[in-house]
Image (cartoon, rainbow, N blue to C red; front, side):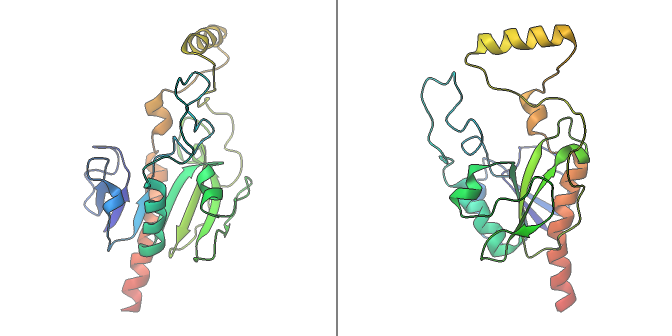
Length: 212
């Protein structure tokens, strides 16, 4: 059994016999084991626009996620598994994790036995390149599809107002040059990438059975 933490209600991790999903209502911060985990903690307060973006009227606080990332990291360290966050997440520096190279490859993440890497979900079916940082502990580290995943659709860019964003998208769509993804499309975890993360977490379970 694998615990999938901070996942979308009725999303891709639901309905699987070997997965125990924890959505917002269940509150993954309360997870107390004993299964290895795949964690997708919220990233809004850790990303490029952690403060809310140029058009935000009330500036947000860096890392203000109600302790979700810290709890997810603690779960991976305690029970084993893998955590994913967007590339350049400020959570890495905040928690003293080493920054992985953009070109790929696993490197030591910390003094807790963790490992980290950068991989683009575009290699695994995402419509955008969606560069992602992984943190793993206690599991086998697979050789992933490293580096640039090729020309993909655009995730999103920052604008000073909603009107500016709408005008830019209308202009670019008319030219046929740029297509942006919706919020749902950006957040989606492709089936092959989900399977990859679950397979990583399962290697801890396999190791445990082998040692019994």
